Length: 155
Length: 178
Image (cartoon, rainbow over all chains, first blue to last red; front, top):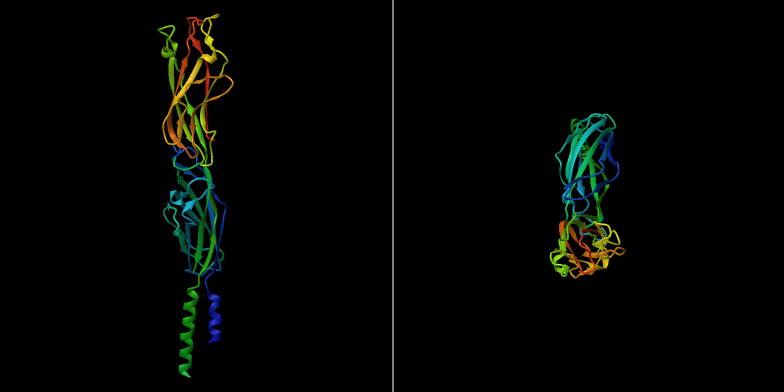
């Protein structure tokens, strides 16, 4: 019995890791001129699955760490005013990727991309996010911060 | 002997099923930065104060006004310098005809009207200056106006020394958001 269990542990699914290209910056200018403000940069998330097996599944989710942007003096701004869209490409390995339609950001995990892997290691997928924010005259002049949470899972 | 082989096979299947449920997770938390800038813009057109119809009573006949269209976003921690000011760009009025005795700057006064939350106009008559900016409108901290209009009024105090002529004076209107 013991020998059999030990031998099958080598068949476990691969491990996953995620890295990002940096942060996202919104230079919100005059809302009358630009009511929908694009972020000044894209966010690239790279998901790497090492030692994947045929038919393993992976996915990437996104959410806001909290429900509002917060600043030093300005009133909080809901992160629901942020919209994201994504595209993805398989950079290495065998497998596939499907990307979901863009959404408004929330504090609940939303599956951005998912797929399955082959048995070539590593399996690498690059997901590129573009963000916009609905600008408003109700926003106070300030600098606001909030974190995104990107979670990659493989099983 | 046969029973022992069958038991081993069952255990193997169970172990494989368990390994198929293994899950690996990794997370990243990039930062989003939203910069909402202060805003302060103003536009104003040339205007005519009027034509004197009754010498000796300029204060009532030579009073003109102009609309100031502005946009402002004052930080919550901003003010008290968020305001619209006016200042004469010259120290005297320019006459249309050389030699005409023109009204001095001290004979010109201004006042303003405006409305809105956090918007306060200086409605009392003040002397215009060529060296110091006078305040027309002040904005409270946190004031946000995307399309505001204030009205600046100007009048001339009459004097029998003024020659009949047309006089011009450039004015500078300034808006600041803090």
